[in-house]
Image 1: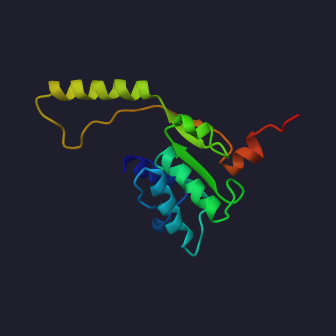
Image 2: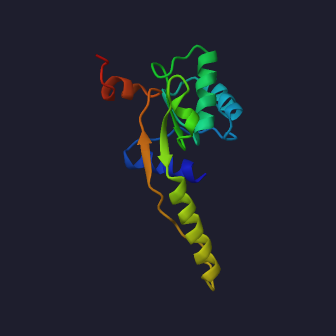
Image 3: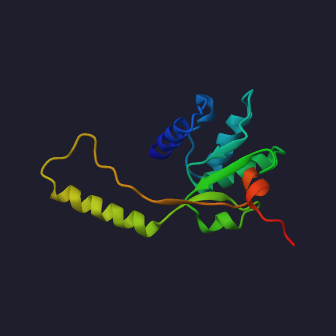
Length: 152
């Protein structure tokens, strides 16, 4: 839910809206990605790009797109999240959002430590900033058009 909320907020910040029917809940597995894309594929208006909650879901989306004859990235750009090792080996290689597992562990440790030392919890909770990086690969159309250098 946090990733979905952050995505929707980012879209609002750049002046774009997200159609509610384009937000599909999955189960963060390959099968969930396939099922989610089947639902999206039944819509009258088709999305041209998808940001998935994790890489396994994105790989499932890419598999279902292949089975439906939809070319990634020519007809559908796909972005995952987590940069699992498999992401660089699927075809086309998956563009993904990378986050440091070490940094995540450090933040979780500090959050747990702070929580045990607090006398009172805050109703809204505490936010922690985790730095992420976009890893551009071949599953996004703009990467292929603008950012990839021609082979010599």
